[in-house]
Image (cartoon, rainbow, N blue to C red; front, side, top):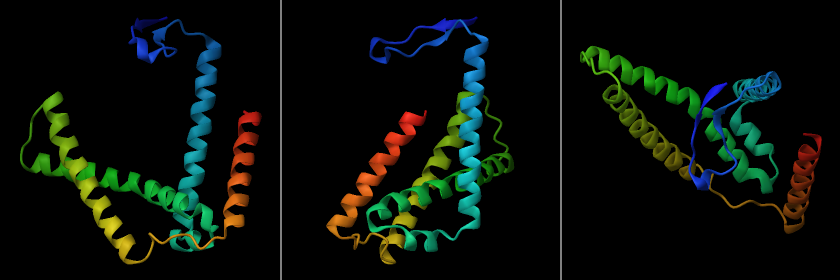
Length: 159
């Protein structure tokens, strides 16, 4: 059994800590492995496929979602590089802070770097026409939306 951590009323239905069973551990491990498998598959597809070409073949109704997914997948490696760069700079400056001060001295520059990169990416995408309105017809958008809704219902029913 884990120590129980009380949560506020607005956080109802979520428990932190408490009794742990073998079934709960197996369920959590299965869900974690499923998520890891999906991340590996999406990461491999992102590595092997050209995102520009993939965005070109997407239906117009899914274009904005495709841009968001492509950008969000490419953020993780950039964050890792940014953390490594900030940690290396701290070591060179002999930053010996411990605890919360050390965390703050790493998190703030990393978030600043991430914000600067996202603004540069947005400007570059806008200048190349990635903010365009979809050229899909109204019927095509409705069909794509209906198929997406049907697919999500199928996923929910299968889970």
